[in-house]
Amino acid sequence: MLSLADLPDDDLYALVRRSSDHARGAVPLTGQLGGRVVGTYFRTTSTRTRTAFSVAALRLGAQLVAFGPNDLQENTGESADDTGRVLGLMLDGLVARTSASARELRAIAAWDTMSVVNAMTEDEHPTQGVTDLSAMLTTVGRLEGLRVLYVGEGNNTAVALALALTRYAGAELHLRTPPGYGLPAAALRRGQEYAAAHGALIEERHHMDDVPPQADIVYTTRWQTTGTTKHDPEWRRVFRPFQVNAALMDRCPSAIFMHDLPAHRGEEVAADVLDGDRSIAFQQAAHKLYGAMAVLEWCLA
Image (cartoon, rainbow, N blue to C red; front, side, top):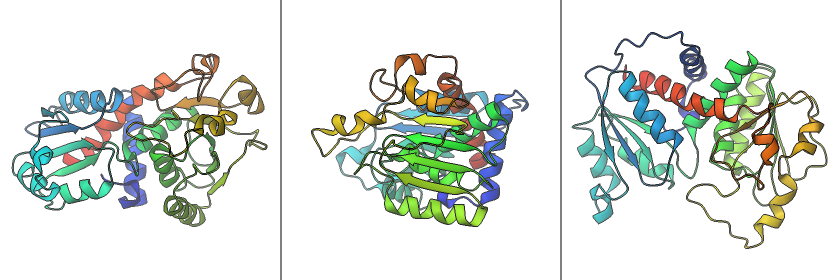
């Protein structure tokens, strides 16, 4: 599970449905992963994703081995290839967050002796994509024809959304990103290819002059993404018009609000929006667990 672009449509659909089923309590926990051993390797901070995968492994009956940022010999120069070769002789699965290029995880996974889950790289946050679509499906009841307004940086969360939502018929993803901080060109092209094949829509603009008033969901993420820095010291000035506040939500009167958390109230989102009655950000966070359970089942059961 290194990129959503690696998944056939049917596998993506099944993962999202399974996550939603877990959210509704419709999946009995019968030790699906009994006898399996899952490692977690987080080189950068994580609250939701690390907790979700740890709890998911335990609830599904697996044993857990946790590695911190200084625990593996990669720190002393061992290659990712050798690291993966050794861990694959002992673990059934590895959930890893590096905030580096996904190439490193592909090297760890190259021996095909254990499942490897991308818990976030600089390129993409694929399990966040499963989480988000699961939360949308459970809350709204559909993904086909869903209209999502994404506001903010075209970061790894936005990439996952672009690679996933565009595979649902009639879905619309409207990206409003600051100039110079849009979706990576390759991810936008792939999203456009998916949209063309599935009768969906993805479009990106770099201003807030027009937003779809019929949006079902307004989504934003933290401006300062974990493990990254901005090249422009004046970046906050560029981002300021892209704050999600009451005025923006009034322009989308039927929309609910989503945020992948952690949030900085007063920056990317106003406190009264994040904590308001139209926000499902914390219910969305709970779906991290359900998404993790679905991903681990898909990889290991």
